[in-house]
Length: 127
Image (cartoon, rainbow, N blue to C red; front, top):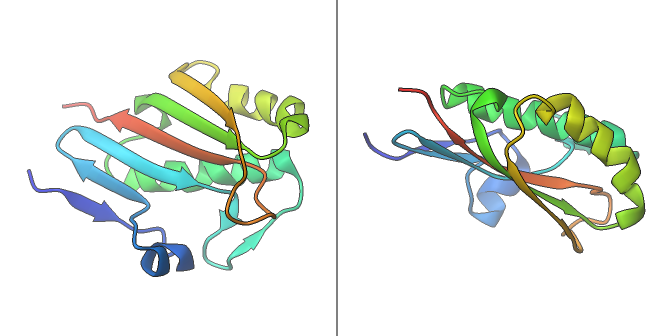
């Protein structure tokens, strides 16, 4: 099976030279995804809303790849302000509480100061 590139339509993808996700055989690699509503390129101001939108964006990419959040085996969370973690963590539990992928959280700067979280995931599609 050939490698397949998936786009969300985000203005960032073409200008920054990446795909929202790459499908390679049974594996789906979803790039770092933020809380932007990609059709309008708008973003909510609070961390919980951004995290929910991030999961919607990830779920859409996974769906296009023939996978779902239930197929996620690895997640990396990037948060610029550790003080937002108590707001973000319960939302992570809403989406991954039953799935429980291997995960890492990193506190670091993000490329846009409006971003409160960025999540990247790896999923394994069922045969």
